[in-house]
Length: 454
Image (cartoon, rainbow, N blue to C red; front, side, top):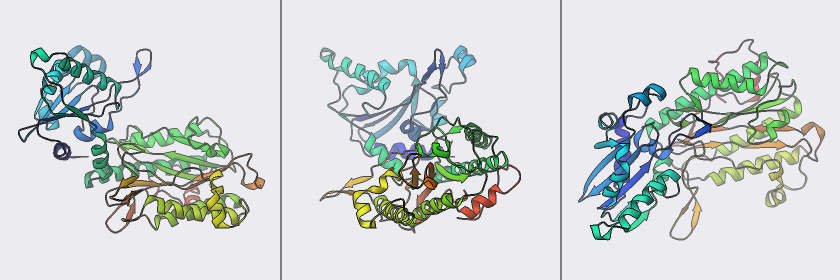
């Protein structure tokens, strides 16, 4: 759990970036209608949650700096006994200062008028214009009131500066408390993948993709992760060749592989694991050859995942391993250098090697940075968390030997950059052929199965 003082420190770091007589605004998310008068499960805006830890809709955080003095103000939904009977408890403005460690708080019903007063006479407004439509409307309305009232001595801010680049940079580097939450989310997700493997092995020819997804979601919920971090992918057979396959509707077939891309969301933080395994628990020879190739590519990439190196360097290494392997298997022809130059591998490995991970599964943060001379690939640095996920996907109609067609394989781990190199947060999820087959040979499902370190 993130301690409340860490949210205070994050707000102070952001305040340190703004000038005297400036104002900074961050809005919470709103509930989203699913159908008629029902809503999707609420998910807080990541920027707002990062600065407050507050999980109610419609709230606003205001940070001010005047004559060197900083102030934090929260606007949140009014206490309403009737609404709380129907829809749940609300924190309310009276309780917010102590609960969230803000200086002052007010009911949301006062926000529209208060914004006009708070913006009046400020030099710069720091606000992510275009991020949330409902927030834009409220801020623009307040700005228009100020601009149309010169006779009342009202003055709108001189300029607007986007806060996102600063928040993205802050969020890219995880604190020890964030890493602890992400490790817990990874551990839950590991157990979920193990559970799915065991269910598949003990229900051969009698299970559907959505049942594996149900096993995963059950493990998430029972461990305290209320929801997946993204739509769970369970692709068996050639469904695994569809990168974002989420129908999860087909029956599992003995002899096929199944690719599961699933991660829990715990206290707002995502895990993101992909494992590919045989439905029955035993790889065929062609499956094993392709699987080992993907694993070799991941292990080679991980060798250079350390401070000072770049994700692009790791990507280039994985591309070379995969391309050479595809040549060796007769799926590609010609020399390695020519194939890499012509990107022939892209027919079978068409996505990137990885992405940042955090409050969002595809987390914020620049992949390139500007130096005095040029824009360059960003070096990895301690505190970053990213995925490393090579894959091979051979379409059912690919012009290759029949034994390879319809096979899709991805192996994905969550990796923390440390001072000395990296730490794999998802290391306990079986990924060698030996470990997968050993786990799936067990005769009953288990949510706490262990495997050797891969």
